[in-house]
Length: 86
Image (cartoon, rainbow, N blue to C red):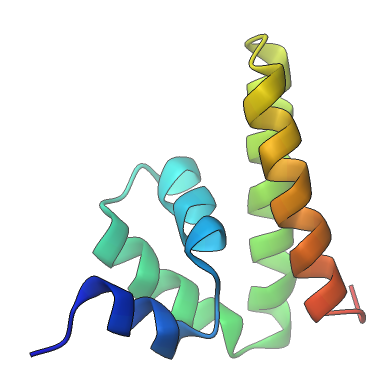
């Protein structure tokens, strides 16, 4: 049987990137893993993930959640580092 950690590892995304997708799309973590995996294997999907994280950052800032916005900024920086074509 696969665990959630196994599924995240197979998605080619980090847990934090999956969490950002789940937050943005209002999905349970396992569904965010599935969506993220599909997006992570397509050039347009990569751009969509970056856009999702940016929108999460904007939403956190607009709600005064500066710590969360900083955490998401670190996630975005790591994602962009892994996908320099963005």
